[in-house]
Amino acid sequence: MEFSLSDEQRMIIKTTRDFVTHELMPHEAEVEATGVLRPELQAALKAKAIDAGLYAANMPADVGGAGLDTVTWVLYEKELGRTGYALHYNCVGRPSNILCACVGEQREKYLYPSVRGERVDCLAMTEPGAGSDVRGMKTTAVADKDDFVINGTKHFISHADHADFVILFAATGEESGPRGIKKKITAFLVDMGTPGFVVRDGYRNVSHRGYNNCILEFNDCRVPKSAVLGQVHEGFEVANSWLGATRLQVAATSIGRAERALALATEWAAQRQQFGQQIGKFQGVSFKLADMALELRAAELLTLDAAWKFDQKIATDSDMAMAKLKATEMLAMVADEALQIHGGMGLMSDLPLERIWRDARIERIWEGTSEIQRHIISRAMLRPHGG
Image 1 (cartoon, rainbow, N blue to C red):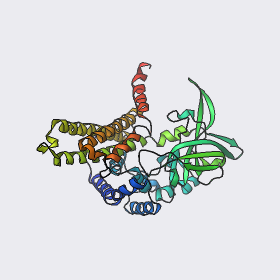
Image 2 (cartoon, rainbow, N blue to C red):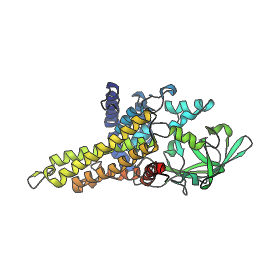
Image 3 (spheres, one colour):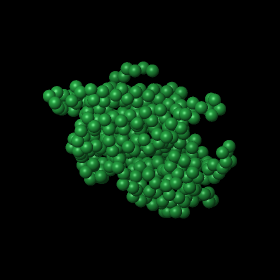
Image 4 (cartoon, rainbow, N blue to C red):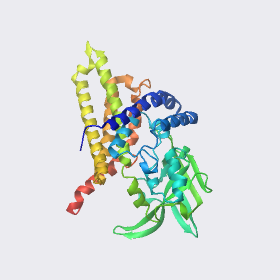
């Protein structure tokens, strides 16, 4: 692995950081105070992101994206992660890579418009009774002549409130496996406004104000068979082919926020004086800073290692799980310690620390809980021994 950055990587990092600092961060206070990202503000910032060449940077060059290698993409995501999801994800869109599975007319209707910023997707797997247990989903899609009829409910669906279509996963059959009957899953492309499909407000969330979750309800929603993404019953294959790096995105954005929190804590420790000296000279504070820097660096190296392996096509599920697990748990620790170093001031909304602290909590849950990541890692360790 080459640890030095190329000139192109440095340029991408600088461009992204400048955009976050000058275009997105100035609006953090408004979003936090109101819990809303105004549509007109979102549109203006999205247009600026497109002009800056930052939109859809995660997508391959042959479909109109930037075509970044995974290491460079992780560095880009880390910079975006310095601000909240409402601003960096809603304004600097990264269409789901699963859209690369589109074929024929699907590319013209969904893939290319998403890359150009003309349409926005959202991904719907999670259900009230099926979170980590994706095979336990109850949403069904039943074939009926030239259509599929969809029934069921999805929840915790991020940014569905301003999406144009949903990438939906539904059960389309069953098969016998070593552990009994398991469901066959198919992916569908379903436009908002399709009869029988309703988007409802989701739950109030302590993390990422302005970046909303929604409830999707399907009641005899009829879609043509041309809406199938990939092959019938092969939804997991489609997802695994294109969504492997999603956990790296969570890891990278967590690292970006942790870097911001550590910088604030370091500056405060150097400037704040108590008992006649800088508080950073007290061992109780200085050792916190050292531990924060150590954990942050370890998480960054794990994430970059997984990204490099992904580019070499040698990454394993454990590599992705380790990066996501370490980075998200590191962010929780760094955010908490940074707030502690600031004392009471850290809890005040005058500083971004209380937001970073709140926002950190969801990272250990979405895109696979910490427990799921540990299960993936331990399973890989035990499998060669018959476990």
